[in-house]
Image 1 (tube, rainbow, N blue to C red):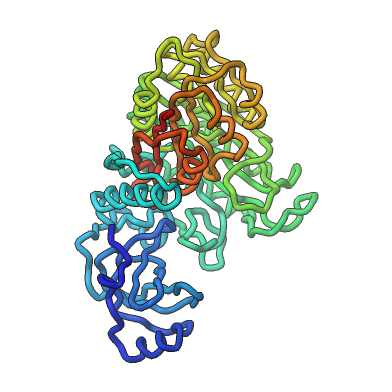
Image 2: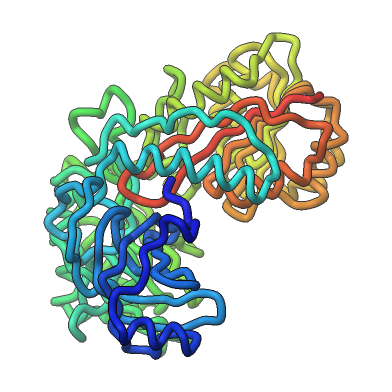
Length: 486
């Protein structure tokens, strides 16, 4: 990874730029350049260091020389927007998506995959050292077998494009909608489903504008998200994907809008590619593609995935890894690191619908799984029964901290895959003082993972680090760490 040392930092080239630096910064709207991009940032941007302060750019590829306009001057850094590229970078790639410049999804599709894989490996190494205070060899980033049509779920948003109601994906750093035909990370047949959903706009349904929806459905708008779950991730349906279609709206009682949505969803079921449909409501103001209350369901709305040659069921609204091929490799590595034997007792914390822990149970281990979502636990139990390991498994819903305190047995191995926020102090204390000899920690946020590894203290040693490129062409990294008792 490029460093930020003053020895390698490019210096100012214009007298105007030098003058503003001497005064302590550049005024908003000032033009800077040429500036050499040094590194990428985890928010999808880049950084440079043309003077004393770090310059954070909204985009850019290491090796490029760019011009930019100052947006905000802070005490320790400056934020700027790239306005032009003066010199190309050897790390550039040609984006394959026609909507790359408009959509905010694959921020790094214009950067070569080998460079990004190396960057992610370096980012994991640096973050573990800087935040976690630990150094260990980091394996090469596992590359996604596919970079197109790999996602099993995409949430399209209703909103505004040029002031007009639209359906598409959000533009980068904006609530504006890019009304693309469909996303190439799903099969092309998804275009038909988006076109059908846009019929609701022409029928007069309003789109949600971010305001709270009052009782009785007044204000705020109606249509919020169209979520397409692709059931293509098992061998039986790999070549002929089927969809679960979910429309998320604001609550508006028995309004005409509700009738239009129901008619649309029932019509979609006539398409052989649609396995099931769901209409759910969301009252909260957060722009999340998560329904709070299902009001209408037809067809088959459960999804399937194959990990380790075994089939698992998921409810459409539960968390599941959307890149199944990478998740399969990630879970295989988790089992390799866990070294499960038939005599082992395993905790699976934040177990979701149970996939990782059940792979351990299939190897003979006793399993205690816990998750905060009741629906996920119900499916974990269902999956255990389907796999014939129910007698070895206990799944409990509820608070992780309390569940660990009341665990039915002491663990030999702990599997943990928490949300982005990481683990609580109480959970970490229980893990630190447990009887476990190894911890397999999977995380979608290396920074909180590193913080938690530091909190586990010197009783544990980091023995292996394995990054996975779960979301190609984005800053996201799924990282697996193996810790062993000293």
